[in-house]
Every structure is written in C-alpha cells, then in structure tokens.
Image 1 (cartoon, rainbow, N blue to C red):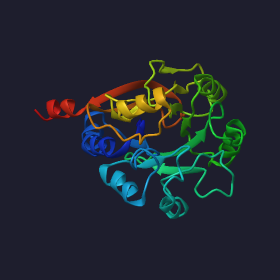
Image 2 (image 1 turned 45 degrees about the vertical axis):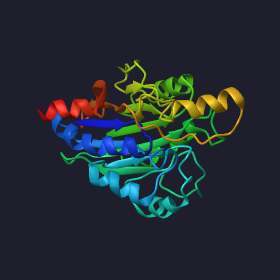
Image 3 (image 1 turned 180 degrees about the vertical axis):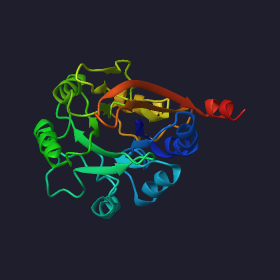
Length: 267
C-alpha cells in the first residue's frame, strides 16, 4: 500500500494547491491514504473547522497538527469530536484532541497515524519517546501499518526518533521546518525515515511568509505582520510503500508539485 504525507500547509495558497493536486495525485501515484499536516493552514497559523472540512473534501484522509494546534480555538470542538484529526501525543492527556487516529485506506487496510512534538528549540512538552511507547501499547496488535509525523525543529531529535522506532513503525516522517530534506531512506528494521517532508506553500518566501516583512523585522526589530506569500506555490510531501502484513516500508519517495505540473498532467 502507498501512503502520502503532505508537509505543513501554509495559508490559502497552500490549501488551494492541495485541493487541486490531491485528487490528481491519488490517481497518478495510486495512493491508498493521504495525510496532511495542517497546523499552518489558517492564515499561516492554526486550522479552523471550515478548513478541516475543505481538506477532507479535497481528498485528505487524516490531519496532523503541531505547536500551533490551538491558535484557532474554534478547532477544539473538532479535535474532541472527529476521529481523523490528532494532537501531538506528548501534549498533556487533558489537552483537547486524540493521541492517535485509526484510518482505513482505499484498499481496506487499517493505518494508525500519530503526531509527536519535538523538544529541542520547541515549546516545553512531555517526552515524545515515552509518549510513543504509551501509544504503541494502545494500538490494536493486528494493526501493522503505523505512520509517525514528528513535528520537530532539530534534525538530531528526528534522527533519534527514527532510530528509536526502527522496526516498530512503518515510517517516521518529519514536519515543522518547512524545508524538504534529501535524506529519505529505509532503516535496517524496515522503517522509512526523512527529517522533513517540506511544506505546501510559496517557494518565493521565508518558510511560506512574505520575504520583505520577515527581513524588516529581522534587521530592525520593528514588528510587522508575517503575511502568507502567494507566489510560486509548491506542494511538498513524501510517499511510502508499506507491506500491510509486516508493516515494513519497501520504498520512500519525496515529491514536489507545482500548478505547472498539474497543467502538464492534464495535457
């Protein structure tokens, strides 16, 4: 089976490209499941109930989040009610949201998806290693395919998590830095790994935000609004082929898709 994780969706430009691309990608890549990190999808920070519905309508099966999860408080009711959106599992147990979600692919395979937040250069949170150990004990033993979205800043954090979970989950794929890394690989135990799958947003930007405003604040300390950039939008993500019986990954491939690519596909 084939699972695609889309990197952090940044604002309306990112959402629009995701909506255009996902239906085509599902057919072109023969995808069984699509998961997206949507924590930057509402104006660059947070997610709303309307955007949640918009992404599902586009063909996204499950949604992960990160440190901006509660930036739009109206999403809390969705987090508490819906089965296909998760908080980072190493948030406090009393924080709104599920620690993991159980999705069903188009081929009928059950897939567990977990979100974790890193600790280096991030907000204070519980231990992600202890959290994933707890979650894996809760997962039904007959579910073999497990995807971990590790929302973290430091590559050392991400590599440690990948090695820690090698052979215990199908894939550990990083998000949060918005920069797609070229280190995709299959570890010896059969776990696919990549430090960061990238973002769905403007490539002519600073991590999806307009360059001028970020530069102004950086150079002068004068506060500005980091508005979402809208030029040269790219969809970045990574798909993994997994044996549904063993849960081991057999291949991993990063992708970058633009609106020009979509037009070429149509032709």
